Image 1 (tube, rainbow, N blue to C red):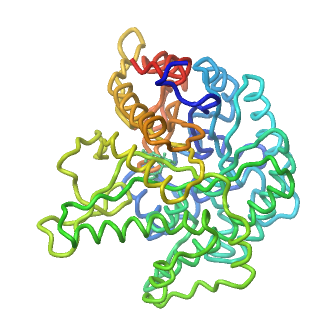
Image 2: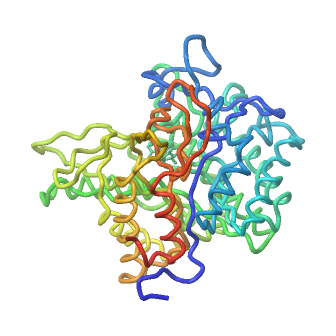
Length: 478
Ligand code: P53
């Protein structure tokens, strides 16, 4: 092995989420979830924020999650393509509503359980280790209507029921589990992230932190239950990461960046250290928010910290403090200002490979637990040539730069990293915009923003490139 290759056993792969690829939203007894009723188009954002209440399909809207890329019926073909690239792992998520269509049933839906069992067996057949997100933003609609989503403490019970079924049924098949995808999204897209809808005049922040507390407690319970059922299981938390830079070295800017970083770390601090950090308790006190932490909560959190820390990285963020010449705005769900040193993607996301190395170091310094990068990639518009090929050199460039920065963090800086899964190894529906045209894949899917297309899969230029990266264990990025 060359000195530039990653540690032996490094888990290379790709990541997807049920609602962005499976489709088959009403097949085999599946129930409806918040993520299904997110429409494509201008209202998507307001729905995701919980400001525009949409709890069923309404006329005149297109809902891309209904069909996704129909992976429900194509998964064998898709996993075969992943295997051809040499994937060691495949990150996917369970749709809660396939297992418990309403969320509060006692008995699970066997058809849903069987679907994922078959899928995991298919992975194993190809030597691919499944990495499973228990909830990737999804919350059954029934739980939203009946209990108000994660604002209700009852959800902890339903979640415990879900994970008990999953860990028992898939014992020996799945080793790596993530409890909640991008848990911090609660603060940014609360309906999409936690099934929260608000009534007028309600203190949104109070509801968000209450819901976050319930998810944090549920996550700790999941860790406890997992280890009791199978001591080999590794449980991870999952953060939408990306260090906040100060806009300048002006102390107000630096302080603002510090506050934003703390707001983001808050979740992982609890999941990894087992208690609410000092700054978070003070913040809640200042805002007059009571999240009702019980003695039992405290004990569960303290005794059941995560085994590893996973995160998504797309870019760093940049913020200005009070009195700055520039203003912070909300873009890509996070507050910030444009970083003048960085180029942006077609969707306005800053591109910052060195920031990836910085973020990896920040996370490892803070937690000293193994990390897992479970999302990274470039959303871009692809052009299909007349011969059917897609020459996505821009995607190769983005990934090459980021993998090189990750290699520096691991080899030069000593960051302990279990693996790396790119986002959307096969084109899928964008979570942020609902578009198909924001593509991340090595595999092209013939489907457009309005849902037209044959769904045929084909390899892009980046397919062979990523295959070579994996075969050389990251030494050959050429
Ligand atoms: P898309 C922003 C907004 C929404 C979800 O995003 C996000 C982010 C990025 O931090 O998070 C993750 O599809 C998420 C995936 C998602 C991916 O980013 O808007 O875990 O579900 O698809 C990429 O380009």
